[in-house]
Structures are given as C-alpha cells and as structure tokens.
Image (cartoon, rainbow, N blue to C red; front, side, top):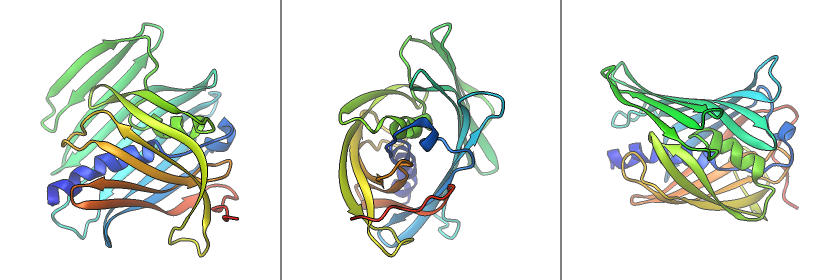
Length: 263
C-alpha cells in the first residue's frame, strides 16, 4: 500500500494539471494566484499540493508557474517531495511552454529533469540528472508539434475549456512524448468542498492518460471546476487499486474570488 500511495501522487499532479475552464487569458492567469489542495485516501490525509502563478515584469503575457507536491510528514512510510516550474507564454491564442524543470528530493539528494522548447529550430531538449548527479538522459526530440509539459497542461486546460469537445493533447512526460485525452463538456453540476457551507456551481470534465506513470499507474481521471471566469479546480478523483484518491481545494489567494453558489 505504501508504494501505491506514493505512486498516486504523480497521477494526482496530472489530475490538477488538466483541470479547469476559462473565458479569457486575463481571467485565468492572475499574478499572485495561489491554490492549495489536500490529497486524501478515504479519511486519511496523505499530502498536499500548491500551485502559484507569477507574471514576469517587462514581458507581455509571460508567466512563471510553480507547483509543490509533498507527502504528509506524520506518515513515516510515505516520502514524496517534488517541485515543478514551467515558464509559459500566451501567444496567438495558445499556451506556449518555453522551459519546464522538475525536482525530486529524497534522502538529502535531488533528481532534476529539464525540458527546453526550441521552436525556431523545431526541437525539444531534455536532460535528466539522477540522485547521484549522473546524467541519465541528454537528448533532442525533433518536432514541429506544440507540446505541453507536466505543469503547463494545467493552464492549457483552463485556457481552452470553453470548448465543447474532446482533445488529444501532446505532452512531454517522463522524458518522452505522450498523449492525454481531455473531454471538455461544460456540463454544469453542483459540488461541495469542506471550505464552504453551500453547494458550488461547477463544470465537470474527465479524461485519460495514454501512458504509464513513473510507477506503472495510468488511466482515467475526473474533476469539478468553478463555473465562473476563473475556472478554479475544486475537486478531483482518481480510482486506483486501493480505492479512491480525492484532491480538494482547501485555500486560495485570488483577488475578490469566492466559489460561485449553485442555483
């Protein structure tokens, strides 16, 4: 069970990274936005994740986004500690990632993955350095396809989810190319989270990851997102072999935003 719970964290990231809708870039990308989530297995809190967005001064429509994923320190059998950073540009109505960096921490050591998108030369550069500071991957993927990375996909979904369609989205995952299917529907539903005393107006989406995660997990996901201009991810669920893992919004920092009431 220890390994399954640890491995689920990587899939939980994917749930967040594909979970929202939007109307315009200004309403999704807000400088200083912070979203904090708890991750639970049944009634057990197994960890948390936090997303932040920062506007880069002097560069139009350019943002640095970050995600932190960490296990519950009171559970000694689980040790999960990740940082993700994605530099994103809004260009021509598209989410264009420029650089993705992932760090995994374990036993005072660090594993690093760097992904750089060189659009003028039609290639993606990927480098992976393991916990022993040995380079395991150093390669180029030549392609003219616009790929998302493991964090930019979160904003891609929020930015494009006003569409009523299914999309197969190319992503760079685990130092290689892959696909994720996102079913945008716009179906209005009510959902509850512990931080409000009323039903929240939300929209629902689901999807499927067509690849194995680092530890062999793969498959379906679902989520509920605020039915307003911000399209904040409210709750997500993942069915795994030990049961259902739930991710839920616990706190947020966004100007004048509150979860919309369901009417």
